[in-house]
Image (cartoon, rainbow, N blue to C red; front, side):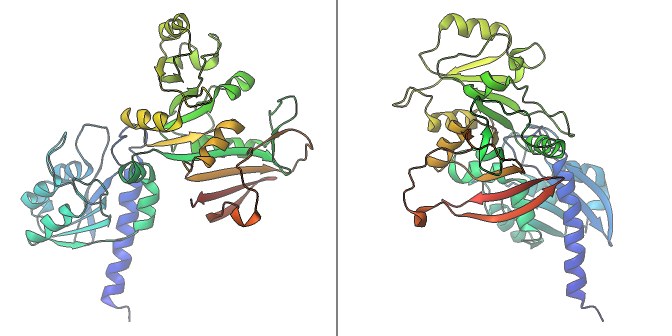
Length: 371
């Protein structure tokens, strides 16, 4: 005989999976807000569902309640993030749940936003609503890792994407790199792009590869394009400055940039931001992250080159690594990661949460940094 509590737990997980799938539909439309999905269940059947569709518009809970109407009374709501309890661009979701007569709320995780963090749960319980927490919490944290990172550190979530040979080269000694990995890896890379708010490269990568930095081989919205270019060396005919791509391209530079060049770039529709220099004359990375968070960017996929990747690791800014490895050997060439100042093997960076996936003849290693 199946225990009634086990059956309830299984049901909660199945309905929460649906809420998470709904939340994903808001990808590319809601940042810096989190991805949230909500469903309303009555007598074991879904009577309504909703998700946060666009920044500044109704939250997932409100969209689900509108669809449910009177059916919300006495029902259970499943939502992957704690309902808000404060007045923002929209009203408190917790009060709307009380007015609708929701009897039980199942959430995956609490909202790390200091304006909410536990207060939504406390309010609901004070009104006699049963609240069950922690259902598929890890999956919810993975879904909203950018939002959580910004709330906890004030910096965006940084993923490094590297495509290299078996001997750790990302290009030949002449800089040639197309293509190290096979087509399945490139398709996966585009899928990963679509899960981030922005793609960032250094000027060296742009000058060498002239990339478009778009999502083409997978479904999803193309992220913002960001280029670190301290002296504004970007060619005016670069693909990222073309008519269709320029409006979503940002060049981050310093006061060393030519004012005339800035004007010509802005005339093409791209944005230019001057930030303070570090002692090497580069745009200071802490200032870069602060500015991008102010612009609503919560997650960034860094696609090179070696200098940018290395500095993100040395600075302790990197959160995740996507390492594509092709069964090729180049010998001399450009290292994937430069000198980190490590002189003792016991000081080597230890990655955690490691997974390995085969993509045709290539391998993808996904791992998290643990600074």
